[in-house]
Amino acid sequence: MDQIKIGKFIASCRKEQGMTQAALAEKLGISDRAVSKWETGKSMPDSSIMLELCELLRINVNELLSGERIMADRYDKQAEENLLAMAKQKEEKDKQLLHLETVIGYTASITFFILIFVASFIEMAMWIRILLVVAGSIIFAVGMGNSIKIEQVAGYYECPHCHHQYIPTYQSVLWAPHLGRTRKMKCPECKKRGWHKKVLTKENNF
Image (cartoon, rainbow, N blue to C red; front, side, top):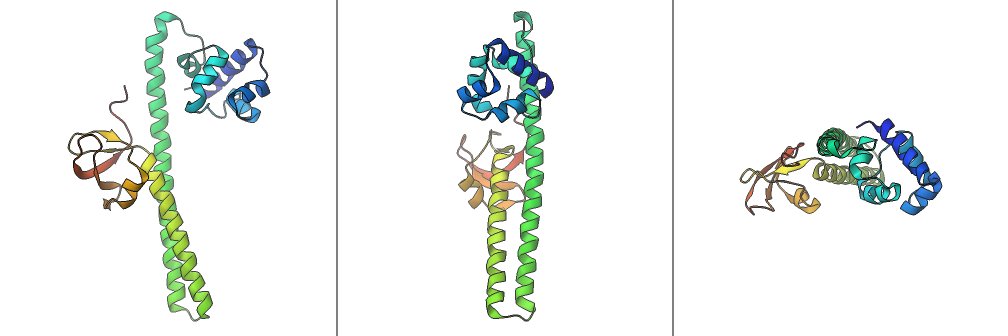
């Protein structure tokens, strides 16, 4: 998707409706800075407000994602292209999130082991030793918690039995035995337990 084109289209439609950025932002319950970012192509409207935005601009979601008015004879083809573009965009975002998860996980683990090593083998006052252990434990817990949260929402897990792809709850991921990003969980579709692998692309999107 061309964010610059979409941004110019939003600006054009907003002006057609006689609204300022501030007026549009107020109707959507967001800041006018967010609207400005859309119109300059720096960001995209969140999916949670796309329908309301389209209603205010008197366009449909397909036209919003295309950055232009769409004739009836091109509508279905353009809708499919937009869906494919959104799926690709989500996949790229999920790849970045999983990379971030790895960085956070390794950083937290290395920091934890360094602090524990220092506290265990270097002479120091007891209160400093305790402080290092506590600090290391907190860093490790927070880092692992954030890593698991990222892994939960980035991409999907696939059941080895029915191949259903889904996003599990945080608790399911947290307590599941795992080998890397493959976790032993119960499938919400077929209800069978198995080693569910992480996948980035949802095959049944369309």
